[in-house]
Length: 229
Image (cartoon, rainbow, N blue to C red; front, side):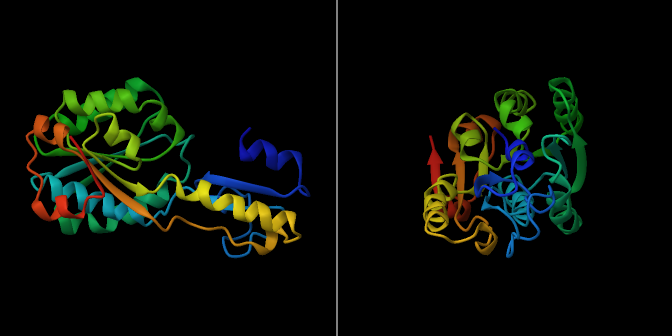
């Protein structure tokens, strides 16, 4: 059951969520520091990370001049917050940012084809339920069009994506039981600040890099948390 559905059912039973994109923007809590109700937990994203996505894809493929940001407006209504971090640094990196909302696989195909029509195009894939569900298709399109792409989750790199940079997906699940324990001992969810990710991992798929003809800088290899061969 989604947090939205549970939120509609009760305003009194304590709820601890894990990996919710934008709990404040979605109206579940008043603020991260002071949730102010029966809900607290651990967010799935740090929106400022998106600027790092652009820096990394430019570092791994320096000749890129256009980058399409792929997202689903319904599944990821918080995407604008990522864009707000990417857009200001794009000009300084010599990159034209293309905002490409996608609502079905045909629109994904069109978006990837559009940025790949000419050389020097790349992709940033927003982390939302729609893009995750269609990750195999997105990865295959990036390979077909030979477009360097960066993703938020390790699973993308593990399944053939070029590289990923995002939070350690195990972290919130490891921390959540402590919040449950505190609530069971009498602490109100309203007094437990919502925590954002603190651990991030860079994963590079060397096989995909070779297939794309991408030469990975040694300094980037040294910074990687995991290299997939």
